[in-house]
Length: 118
Image 1 (cartoon, rainbow, N blue to C red):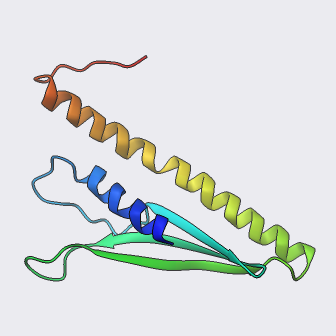
Image 2 (image 1 turned 30 degrees about the vertical axis):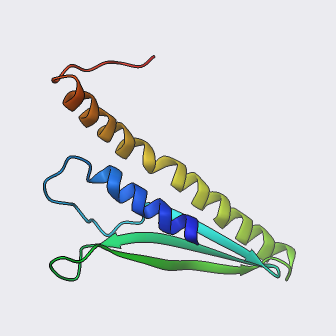
Image 3 (image 1 turned 180 degrees about the vertical axis):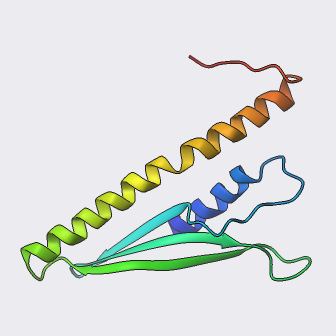
């Protein structure tokens, strides 16, 4: 779960890079899982605005679901499918955010000139 905490911290930094006012949309941008004694737990991580002046953002974890993979074949299939779907979703999320940040960095460092990487 620590990886998910680091993930949401990094995603928040990328989303708000070069912005005067940080944006918090309440969506999960990092995911994690645990597997212990046959139980698979899936989690989503998200950030919220600071509770008050001078405080940092709030970081939260939400348990999506839990699966007992050793119970029967149907439960195993359901848990593995949920894990696979969570990984697919996670792979789709960072790309637009990173590209937007890269665009901002390129404009700042090169006086508005954009360089394409092939």
